Image (cartoon, rainbow over all chains, first blue to last red; front, top):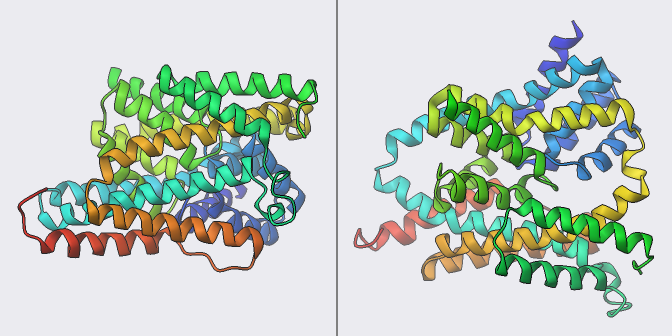
Length: 190
Length: 192
């Protein structure tokens, strides 16, 4: 029964992929090699599509791979398989935390955890900034040409706008998409 | 029932409007969960992210389950989680079925030249908010700097040397938790 197998394979990916997003990728590669449900080329397409659609990359990947295997139902079953372990584990962790949330040990742990969590998010943001605004590997050869000047100007304008009007993030995303499309057709990218 | 439906819708908005996965979801979560619905505080959001990173699965799903469960028990966790994945299932299915060359369309590529820049700025702004609540004294500043410098340094290193080792988020989280106990537990209970 292919649907059960689909659920089982993605359940495993959801259970063992720690760290979110692209951590799912090695598991998808393994599924592809083992079952032949989708090809490596499908996986490459999937990454491109996941990165250019909203939503969590792991979830997008599961839906895409599941759809290629067994249509609409396949996509839904693969996605449910991927998220089932998370739901079970988080509910367990939540129950335990609730019980011990007054304990000073848990308080101390969270005191250390919060700045680390912020640091990890800041580092992930820093990588995104590097990938988008600076081509680091070109920097030693051509320092001025390594910067995405269009992006830097847009980023400065967006930051000023966010500080001035604290609106829903989607407004800034829509505006940036429009600016990107306009700049693209006006050949403003270097 | 209304609360469950509210949660489904709020998380569907979060899932449907987040570009770039996991970390890029933070600005949306701050807006919907902290500022609009008051389902969690900024500090709790930092806790959920820390736990979401060292438990298996997609961070967005882990965070949704956490908040949903805290608000309305197991059924709440399920509603919030289904909400966050629902837009992906619909959008990806449509693309997989009809628009296989979606990512190659010129207009989409151009739009993403802009959206990627916006995601950078949104994450920066979100980190600033989180920083104010989590980096509160010298020990927390030290923990933040250490995690940020090592993690960001390795990321830069990897763009030059792709084979450079990586450190799992679990390692940072475990060390930081232990540091919290040593640094905060040691100096008594005078401040929490």
